Length: 148
Image (cartoon, rainbow, N blue to C red; front, side):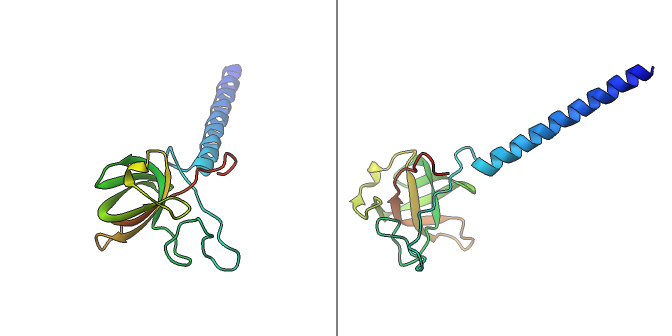
């Protein structure tokens, strides 16, 4: 009877250790990749002392940050579906939405492809700020292999 208790206790300890290892592994994965499958943390370096993007980085006014930055999941003539660190985002496109590459050269909307990383400067459609209409889309250069 005593031997059976020790076996049950040992089995319980092993199970608890397995659960702890799984929780730890999940925490490490989420910490590195975020909650979404294609989590993205693309942040170009600012010019020291100014807080502004350098030449070739997303324009939009001195020091203005993009409203949404993410990887294109889907693209139509009316909308853009992005994967962002905060989850999927839907951005409406207008007839006057401008598209540029990272050097500021105008490109056609048709040149954007799923998988491209873009910075979107937009105006809110509704008062909640969640629905956006893009005014400018900047295709960013691909991330370096060692960049998170």
